[in-house]
Amino acid sequence: MLKQTWGAGGSAVNVSIAGSRLGLKTSIIAKIGFDNFGRIVVDELLRENVDISGLRVGFSPTGVTIVVINSRGEIIMFGHKGAAEELSPQEVSEYIISRSKWVHIASLNLDTTLKVIEISSKYSVPVSWDPGRLLSKKPWSDLEKVIKSVRIVFANEQEYANMTGVDDYRKAAEKIVEAGAEIAVVKRGEKGAYLKTREIEEESPAYQVREVVDTTGAGDAFAAGFIAGILRGYSLRKALSYANAVAALKITRLGSHEVPRHEEVVDFIWERGVV
Image: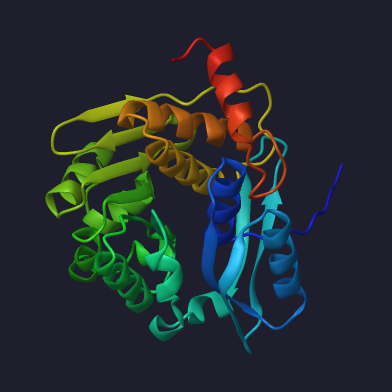
């Protein structure tokens, strides 16, 4: 049976909505077009109690991605970033960053990424960074400028290989930490997640679910879960487990930002005897 749905998406939207559902107060700094798709983004962000004062509107079309999902929840994506790629350093809201406890950068162009890091550093706000597929292919000399300035790097195994030139995800994570990031987190999908710091390393298996409906946005759900865990004062191990649970529940639901509430995540973990 074929089913078609429309909804807001993209890493920034996904993480901001997920954070809100997990009990955080979230804002978004991003760019949309003056079109119907932009309206969908605004409507969903407002519905999810995400502050949109940092949202910018441009004349290019809003970025659109077509996601095709098979019966196992696996996805094929065809996308065009549109206005999202055009967010300039000058359009970044210093006010929002100055009032934040955490800043997460997802798939921004390099110049704007560095501007966000500069402002965050000015106000001593910790930063996490998810380069995404395209940015992970940039030269190491460019990526190192970001890596050395952020607290956490989130990426999947292929993106770690793209960034570092190292196929072994453990060694790739070690290179990221050596370059200056405090924490390297490897998102491994159905295999769980791996975390590396200078002092510790941790493998956290994925939670099993009865049915995988849609894996779109699972990595964003994981990142939001980990950040929420850190802000709640969890240990790195507990934050990793919490993030895996958020991602596990997300993939049982259709839609890139269909993330559970905090209470659902806690119940899910307790039911499995994890503390």
